[in-house]
Image 1: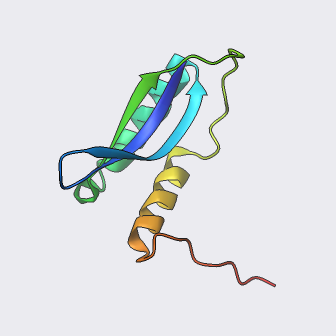
Image 2: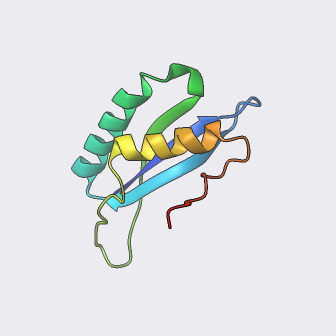
Amino acid sequence: MKLVQLKRQAGNGSAGVVAAVGPMEDADADAYAAELLHLLEQHPDRGLFVGTTSVETTSGDAAEPPATPAELLRAVLSSHDDEHGLPEPDHRG
């Protein structure tokens, strides 16, 4: 089992996780990470990178990703672009 992590490189050289997906089966996590990496190549100036890490689950069950790689990246980029880091309120009535 693997966890896919989207990280942002900080100015001091450290990296913070901004989003994580999983745990997923190894092949599924690798495919998700590869697609996310491909999307990140279109935004090289954002300081984002993707990686996977092996994890153990008590149940042994894999999780379904809550979002596609494109949706995840879009959410992270939109929250980063907002000066407060919060999504716009939903004003639908």
